[in-house]
Image 1 (cartoon, rainbow, N blue to C red):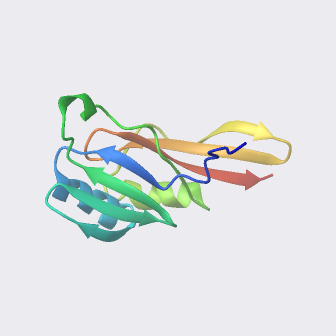
Image 2 (cartoon, rainbow, N blue to C red):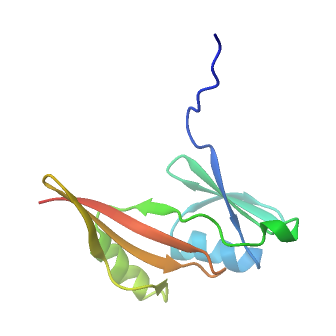
Length: 125
């Protein structure tokens, strides 16, 4: 019997309102690599995972995207650096879970298009 097993996530789409403003935020502020762009969309690389920024083709796709959790090594350092770049954080880094000798830390933020995302870090204690 043949199965269609999902192998990996190939791309995550993020709806935007202004493509140039979104490119600036994801490329220059967050530091993702811009692969290429057109007047309606942009493709960025996040360690092998493509992030597609796109102007929605239909009204039904204009809502905010799913939360993308960007993994970072040092969440407090990332927070401090991006706070000085005027990233709109929704609080400060905090522990959300403890599993054995590992703490999971998160801090949520808004991009320039109103989407909510997060930085996360797993810390050995």
